[in-house]
Length: 193
Image (spheres, rainbow, N blue to C red):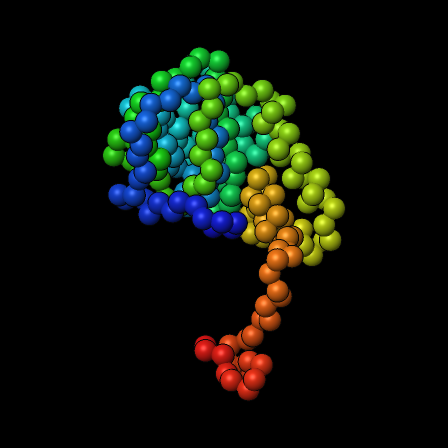
C-alpha cells in the first residue's frame, strides 16, 4: 500500500466479511484493481458494486450516483489508486457485507478505507476532499508531482502520503541516530545487517 496498511485480494478466494448490519445511503472506498472487470464489494446478495470493461455499476441500488476521484463518472482504470463514492437517496440495509467478493466473482487488487454512511453524499462533499488534495499537489515542486503521478496517487492517498512525509517530532524522545547496514555504531561496534 502507498500509505499505511490496506487489504490485498488475490482474485480467487480472498474476501472480508462482517456480521454487522448497517443502514447505508453511501459507500466510499479506495481501490487499485489489476483489471477493469471485477467484483468489488457487496452490501447484500443483490446490492453490490462491480466494474465491467472499466465501467462501474451499483447493482440493486436505487438511482445511484457514482463518483471517481471526486468527479461524477463511472470510468475506472487498472493499476492506479482511485477513490470511489457511490451514493443514493434510498437506504440500503447492508446485512451481508463482503469486501472483494459477490457470488462466485472475486476482486483482484488493493482496497482501502471502506466506509458505509447513513447519509446521502452531495457532489460538493465528494469533491471537497479531492480539491483539498489537488491544491496540496499543485504547491509541490514538479519532480515530486511527477513521482506522485507515477505512483498513481490522488485524493486521500495523496493526503496520507503528505502527512507521512511530514513527521512530528516527539520532544520527550531524544533523537536516535540512523545507522546504515554495516555502518559504524558510536563506540566502535557494527550494526547488524
